[in-house]
Figure 1: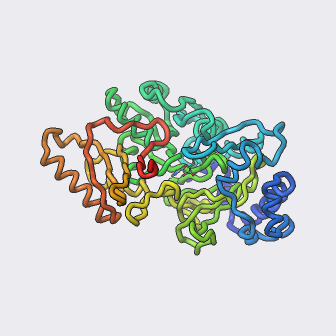
Figure 2 (figure 1 turned 30 degrees about the vertical axis):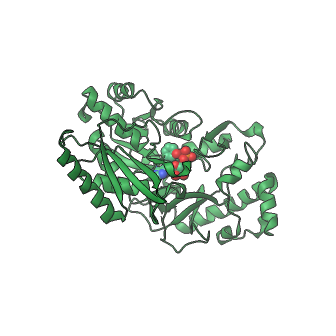
Figure 3 (figure 1 turned 120 degrees about the horizontal axis):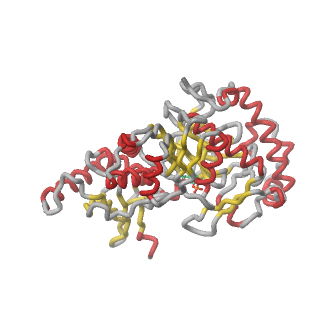
Length: 435
Ligand code: DLL
């Protein structure tokens, strides 16, 4: 049986969905035009008014919004309502530049919680479920975003936040937790500490979990499922648009359903910015059509994926995005070859015995890019067996070369020497930017 939270919305015909989207889009465009000088000026510059949006196809005539626009209007310049109506602020720290700040009205929080509740229902959670939220609570959207969704669903939330892993595990066992929400890398960290504590997956009652906030491979999914004894679903989102629950995998896990009653997705060519042909990969661009605090028109996420509008076996009609491989900002260009860290992860995990703890170090030596991938020595290889180490390194390196066409040096390092993550894992150390 497929579990819906709002069957009417989740399974409505595509035509009906478009009929729902159009007035919402028109209303959003009018509100930003009237209330956000940034949008009004941008639209005036290209000679468009809200009245020009007559059909959904007119969306592509509207200007693109990028992260820098949020920074330039820091902190509240893109808010479309008075501060009196803003009930919550979140921010993303970002590794470069100023943080980006977003604000939510009461209705925004309700809509967000509803999207999150739909995601949880999709993975089988209901009022009898106990959901441990191990995303960080705070300015990051993961913790509170998931939290309000669990409450909206009427399940029991355990607001663990991230970190303090032994205590997390004690709670998983003692509270009979059925669902967990955290980053995939933190899930692996939990699995490892469980082993150290002598806790087995049979001591847990976990059924499913939603893992996101960072790219992860199917190999990683298999590891998490095997070690925690649950079904792992991918959840996607970004703070600029809302936070977690912009999209989520149903039980068929053939892409992530985007809640199109609230978000209109498009895919554009990363170089030209023009729409790509249906099914082609490109930049995911999202327009919010119900948000009040900070509605965004055609926000370029920089996440690369494809879209599918085929009806899903689960009965949902909302478009599916492919598992995002990563942001264009995170793509590595190594001697002309473009590669995402998540693709490297997929290859590493396809070689038996490699644990999903790795770090990619990029350098420039004599004007040429070099890549070293550090992985931990598998248990089967003894640290004093130099031949064994070299042959294993060679095996992984040639696999990377044959699948991705990159030349990377593999370096086996001591077990546990790669830092474990409690949130988003830092997979890449790029020394090239240091001059
Ligand atoms: O990471 C929101 C979130 C929290 C999503 C918890 C899912 C679960 P930001 O910190 O603003 O928001 O980072 C957003 O993270 O543009 C993607 O590049 C990446 N990302 C998020 N989810 C996924 C995913 C939260 N499932 C950025 N797969 C996004 C791959 C993801 N990348």
